[in-house]
Amino acid sequence: MVIGALAEADGPRSAAELSRAIGESVPLSSLYRSLAVLEEVGVLAPHYSSPGLTRYELAEWLSGHHHHLVCIGCGRVQDLEADDAIERRLQEIVADVARAASFAELNHALEIEGHCARCA
Amino acid sequence: MVIGALAEADGPRSAAELSRAIGESVPLSSLYRSLAVLEEVGVLAPHYSSPGLTRYELAEWLSGHHHHLVCIGCGRVQDLEADDAIERRLQEIVADVARAASFAELNHALEIEGHCARCA
DNA sequence: TACTCGAATGAGAATCATTAGCAAAAGGAG
DNA sequence: CTCCTTTTGCTAATGATTCTCATTCGAGTA
Ligand SMILES: [Zn+2]
Ligand SMILES: [Zn+2]
Ligand SMILES: [Zn+2]
Ligand SMILES: [Zn+2]
Image (cartoon, rainbow over all chains, first blue to last red):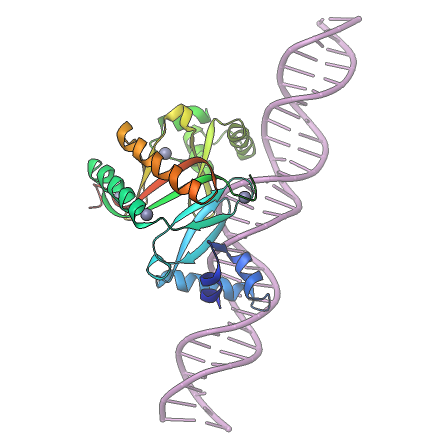
């Protein structure tokens, strides 16, 4: 149920949001347990963008590589898939700066902060 | 004292870490109050990278715009200043994708995950 | 100097997301 | 059916952060 809910979501979801989505009949303790297990085995990726709570999304090997739009107004985090050309340019930049800093780059995460369409 | 401690730090610091740095004689309630005020007036920027706690760093107009290298090995978050040409290219990409998503972009944060020189 | 009153402080309680403990329920092989 | 291991779902505990409120401070005034 967690995986299903996250597959339909358009961004990371917190435990509370997931609970609402899959029905409150599932106890929070079970939900938290499931989230911990799924994270451990690499199916879910945690995402920290708001104080005091963790949101989860499907790991990139399931959902595909993407970036995030973080709304300062309402706190919503929206997924954003860049097209290949853009992603290639971005990957170039990341490789450049990582190399310059002697850092062995494995992945990158770009977050764009601002106001979403609803909060404009 | 908070600003001084953060100016000397090489990365974002949590309230607990700051308390240790500036002396435990300052009560936590006062420290949290100061952090809230400093954030409100735009001197500090919050940084969420670990579950359940907020770290602060000097806002970019004080510390300069920069990105972060997050080491998967040791958990360290290292500041990274990209040179102007790179930063310009990155800014272009961000503006492009934000526009395409009808998102009013205010700032961007690029985090590169991987292994730092020490953890290679 | 002494008085006044609004602002700042500090100690502790309250809050909220998350974890941990534990007894009951479920599953599965023999 | 029985024994034993795993999973479940309350509930209490935790830990970072925020709230509350009585006390203290301090600038302005007489
Ligand atoms: Zn919004
Ligand atoms: Zn990318
Ligand atoms: Zn490292
Ligand atoms: Zn930084």
